[in-house]
Amino acid sequence: MSSATVTVTSMEISPMIVKYGTAGSEVDLGGTLGNVVISAKYHKADIKADQTGVTVRDRRVSGVEVSVTTELAEILNKDIWKVVFPHATETGSGATGSFSFIQNTGDSDIANAKSLILHPESRASTDTSCDYTFYNAVAAAESSITYGPTEQSKLKIVWNILGDSTVTPNKYFKFGT
Image (cartoon, rainbow, N blue to C red; front, side, top):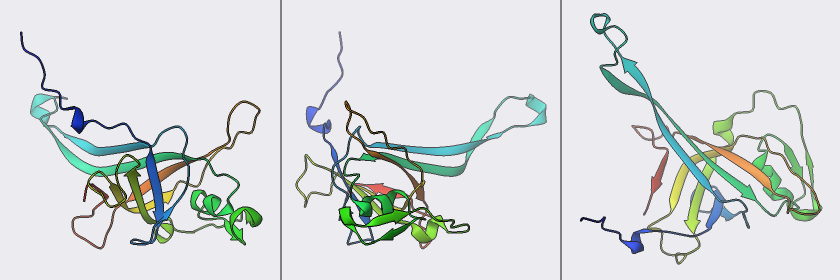
């Protein structure tokens, strides 16, 4: 009988600290609820030949899609709303400010994109060996907020990760230092 080699030190249970902002000076977005989910996918195009009908002979990378989903708990802080809805306008800041949804046709996601860092709370702040660093993250600018007597309100963010076009090939994110 054989068994798998299991290395418990390679396993993780930890909430993530979510930081967002200009690279090198990202700001902690506070408490999260409902886990942090990272999704990454290489899109592939089928390679076929008439001689073999619809049989796929190979697949080639045709694109990359990366997203991160978080739910932020501190919904009374208007600075958090500006992160979730980058095309809207914030007046003032924090809990005392106001927030307005405006017609902003043509506003660019890449112009609003900033660095997103996910850091496991189980690690020291100086230990970046398990950090996820996303170079160009921008919120999808949609959320729903539920108020009720049995569940805490939260702002859900689906972060779209855009490629860093300042390097070739484009980089989307890195895991580790």
